Amino acid sequence: MNDDISEEQVLGKAYDARLMRRLLAYLRPYRRSALLAIVCLIAGSALSIIQPYLTKIAIDRYIRNNNFSGLNQIAVIYALTLVCVFALSFSQTWLINLMGQKIMYDLRMQIFRHLQKLDVSFFDKNPVGRLMTRVTTDVDALNELFTSGVISVFDDIFTLSGIIISLFLLNYRLALGIVTILPFLILVTLLFKIKVRDSFRKVRTAIARINAFLQENITGAAVVQLFSQEKKQYRQFTRINKDHLDANLQSIFYYAIFFPLLELISASAVALIVWYGGRQVLTGALTLGTLVAFIQYSDRFFSPISDLSEKYTILQSAMASSERIFKLLDTEPSIASPSQTGSLTVERGSIEFRNVSFFYNAGEPVLHDVSFKVEPGEKIAVVGATGAGKSTIISLLSRFYDVQQGEILVDGENIRNFNLQGLRSSIGIVLQDVFLFSGSVSENIRLGNHRISDEQVQKAAETVHASHFIHKLERQFSTEVGERGSSLSVGQKQLLAFARALAFNPKILVLDEATSSIDTETELLIRDALAKLMAGRTSIIIAHRLSTIQNADRIIVLHRGRIREVGSHQELLRLRGIYWKLYQLQYKDQPID
Picture 1 (tube, rainbow, N blue to C red):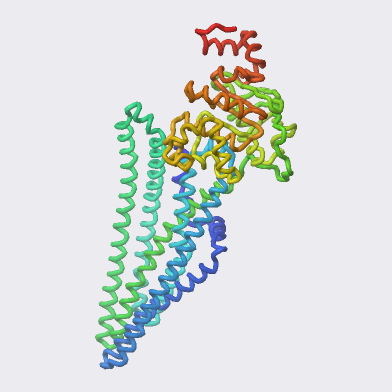
Picture 2 (cartoon, rainbow, N blue to C red):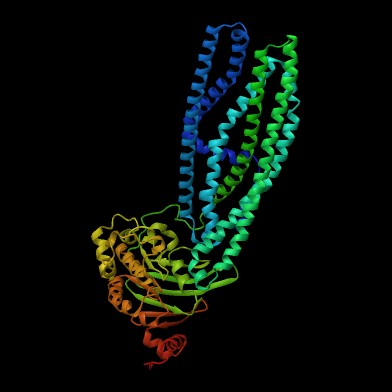
């Protein structure tokens, strides 16, 4: 969790040309919308700049001369500019936000597609909360950049430039007076930028801690309640939430100072214009209309500057988020299909581990020089104490990890030569901890494979005796199982996993502690289902319950990552070795043949 939080603290540069070029690449499919939005922005800004000048004309030409006809004309023109500004503002807002949402859709799809390609070892090292932040919070930060930053900055720059030019054209002396205030404005903005940057870092750190804490506590809610830890967890969350509150209050404090101070500077500029410009009007050196227009321009002069300071914060956040997103997208999967994939498919289902050694962490080997062979249709079992390396064999066979030494062959071919999807679709795995997705019963059996018909789904469920409880559900196969199958018991979820494996009809079947959470009555029901499921398939059974593997063709006994014994149930008992000791521990009250 600490690594996750420390990564959130990094804000990066305010502007990185390399990252910006990559970000702007997402604009290319929507460049027409972007160009049209820029045109609308510039046209709207130009019309807004014209409005104070229309006020000057109305006062100097028509109000002073009691010209009602001319005043009516200028009022109509002013009203038309307001309507046009509204239409242009609506158009650019719609175009920018529509473009932003489409870009975010594309980016999220790209991240999700990339996450699906990454290997299991990547997810071992990266917390779920961090990856969720990449897809949600960081993408939202980029959305703000595209909708309120990249294109909108044209509006601020054009408006500010147009106002400065208009001010000097109207009266360069008054314009110079406004310019003298700029150093104070720049100083205030710089101080605000530094302070907000610091508070922004604290807010991001605090929200990262909240996300991590919430994810852990919601996932482990049953454990918290079981050990009566609610008060302790509440106190801990109170501290974390208080840090988030304090960080936000600090940010609010700086905003509360900056914007009123900006208003004070703006009001001071107006006061200066009224004092000096009023004297000019009284002496006849300046017209009243020019003074009023100048006041309106100076009032609008500070708005783009305020917006640009906001854009800086948005830009800084977007650069940090884009750096994290691109770091994820640039992470290449360590396990991938060969560059030239032929038509290699699993036909027979033979398996061979040839001098395989493997470790998750350097210097901590899990498997040592493991060699065994499984013929097509053969049924073998792998047993051993916890940590012996049983489940690792399954992970290596499925190429969730690659071996460091030796090789694994399927149908005589190294599994590295198979297309990943083709290899894994030929292996049906039923795990102890069954994962069900939100959706219906049939959807969790079919898993999106529409080539599996409803009849095949129902037949698979019936074969493994899952249909007994499914038909008792309110909507039977259309019943929603809830998140992670929350509405089903552990045994029912495992029965669905059996039905899923049967529906996909794999060449190789792996049962990893698949019956450990099923009660004795249910286990008796599925024994014949397992026999049907394993018929004609190469099967590997990993089990603690030795009663479930007594009919295996061979039993492999692992101990500390090495194969220590191989044989049938009776042969291993006669050896009186590790397997005999395991059997004795489970059936110490029963006589051993």
